[in-house]
Image (cartoon, rainbow, N blue to C red; front, side, top):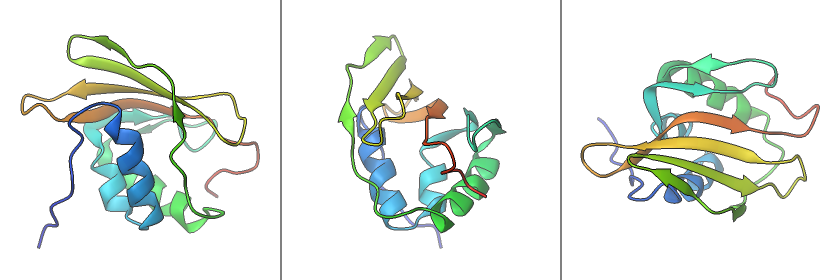
Length: 125
C-alpha cells in the first residue's frame, strides 16, 4: 500500500516537508522530495545520485541524527521559470544549505540538486 504524502506547492515548502519527514523518521518520504535523477552532495565528500540512493542515505542519516530537526531561516528564493534556488541559514553555523528545485507539470516542486552543508564529524557513517 502506498502512502499519500503532502507535496510541495512552492519551492519553499520543501524545507518544511523535509523537517517534518525527518522528525518522523520517514526516509522514503524524504526521498520523495527529490526527482528520480536528483543529485545530493551527501554524505560529506560524496555525491549521491538518484532517488533510491538518496533514500538509502537518508536511512543512514536518520539512524545517526543527534536530535530533532528544526526548520531553519529561509533566505530569499531565486526563480527562473520552472527552476528555483532555495537556501537556509543553518542553525549550526555551517555556512549554508542550498537546493535547486524544479516545478513539475502538475505544479508541485521537487529538489533536483541539494548541498546540505553540515558540521564536520556529523556525517552519516
